[in-house]
Image (tube, rainbow, N blue to C red; front, top):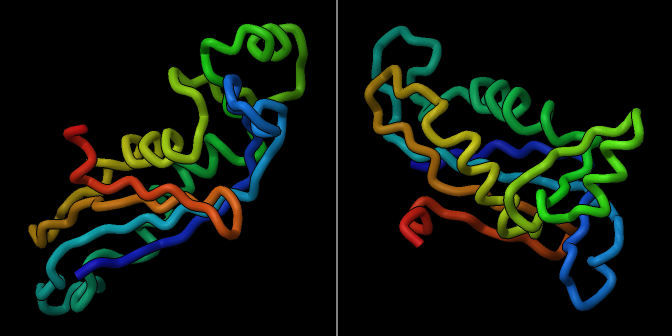
Length: 151
């Protein structure tokens, strides 16, 4: 069975080599759908009995690892010298320096990598992170799934 928890945050970025307006500084209201899979927990008397995982546990992990680090930040590719100079010379900003151009596809993989393996399978029900669906706009998303790991 699969369960999904959604979190949202605001973040800026730019796609340095883009041929259109995404080359400029801009931001989005991001929405991440975090999907875990596992068997139903059958341990009698447990708070999680009948669940795959408690939604609150997913939320806690996602808020600590994703929301706290990305919300109201600006994701900057470490090859974007102009923006790195700006952030190094100014205060009051929250740069998030990454080793990739911050496209929706790469940010979805980044989130997957940040969360993968961090949720403990304490009930032995095969709890596994299977996908991140990252909405960059209300009509556009990138989907990163576990089977993509080998690509």
